Image (cartoon, rainbow, N blue to C red; front, side):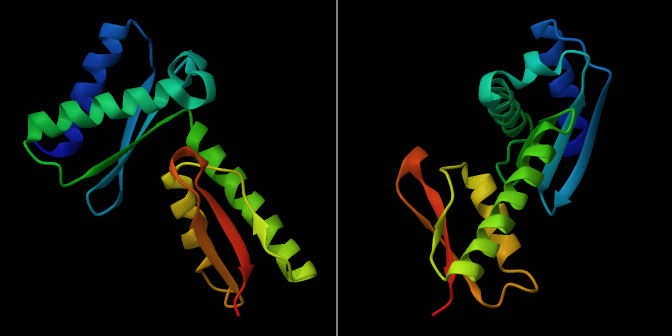
Length: 154
């Protein structure tokens, strides 16, 4: 049984025990050994929770259970519900683009709000892409106060 089958089977068990209905579970390999699990649901707000707390807990639980079943920790899982995280990611990228524009206009560094390692990584990668040769990003701060600083390269 491959990891995608174990992911789907385990998630179906969790959702059944939670008594939560869903219409579809889509699993795709985003990068090597990194899977995106998107749950289509009639009750997405219940699964997402306040500021995504439930989605984080569900992701952690799924990860631990699948690690135990597969006896390996050599993969990563990102749980999404009705493309909630995808929309969040698009918003974070749009915010970082506005901050890049402000840096170029004023020459002054811009500080983004604290965010998860996942979103910080997305911004760093985005700002390393084509058209950003003049831009530099760094992560500063500790724990849940960690944030990105965008500035012109010196």
